[in-house]
Amino acid sequence: MTEQKSIEINPKKIQTLLNDKKAQIQTALNVCAHCTLCAESCFLFMTRDQDPKYMPSYKFINSIGTLYKKKGCVDLACLNEIKDIVWKDCVLCTRCYCPMGIDIPAMIAHARKICRSQGVVHAFDDA
Image 1: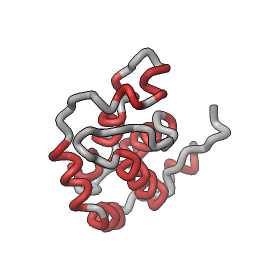
Image 2: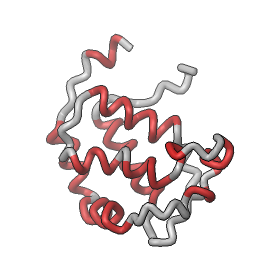
Image 3: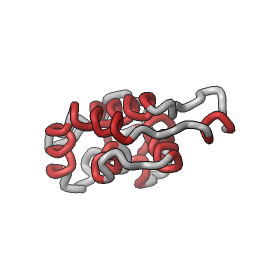
Image 4: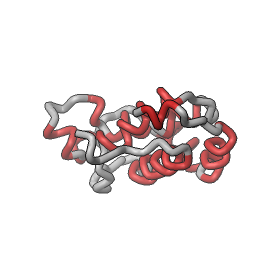
């Protein structure tokens, strides 16, 4: 953990990466009706007592949505929260289905890419 404390976040790099998928992110955030129909397609949601934090919509809104709304101006603590959402709470199995056509796996994958660009990645050997 001491390594992560020395990480400097580069908001401009995050904003550049957000701009790469700006239209897709904007559309996803505007189209999501919070209908929760995507939830039952997520095996993590179904096997974890239907905890709302495992709903696909929650995961993309609280990862890429947070980055987008803050225009990339986030601190290390925020990126660590996003890291947990996109790696611990999602396995990118691509089973999630949105009836509105939101490509949730693409949103999660892009959030992972942004985290990686800042050196914030999940250490899989840390249980």
